[in-house]
Length: 124
Image 1 (cartoon, rainbow, N blue to C red):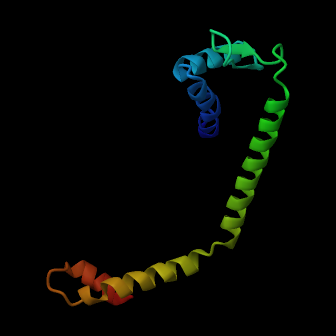
Image 2: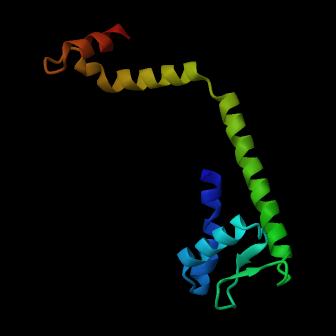
C-alpha cells in the first residue's frame, strides 16, 4: 500500500503542472480503476481531467514509465538486500558502545547521574 501511495505523486504532479485539481482527478482515477478501466489516466486537455489513454493513443509514455518504475524498484530492492548482507550487527554494536563510552565516560563518577546508569556505564 505504501508503494502505491508513493506512486500517486506521478498523476498528482501532472495535475498540478496542468493547473487541474489533483484531488478531484485522483478520486476520478481511483473510481475508474476500481470499475476495471485500467487504462484510465490524466487528461490535461479535456474538461473532465480523466480519459482512456488507450483510446487517446497515449501508449509509449506509459510503457516507458512502467519500465522506469520497475527498474527503480528492482534497484531499490537490490540495494536493500546488499545492505542487509553487508551489515554486521556486532560491529555496529561495538561502534555504538565506543561512541557512547567516549561521550559519556565522564558521567560514571558524577553525583547527579543515577546509580543504575553509573553501574551500566562502568560495566562496559
